View 1 (cartoon, rainbow, N blue to C red):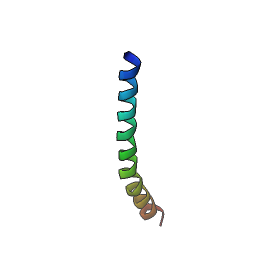
View 2: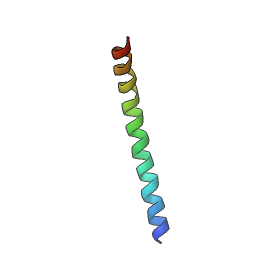
View 3: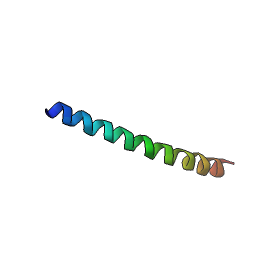
View 4: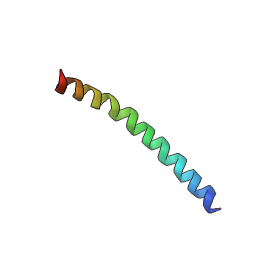
Length: 37
């Protein structure tokens, strides 16, 4: 019961993390290119 709840939480956390990375990586790449270029 606890492991199923933890697994559900982990999947949700990974989905949120993936969305955050998909949102932030282009911004970071753009700012890094502007800083280095």
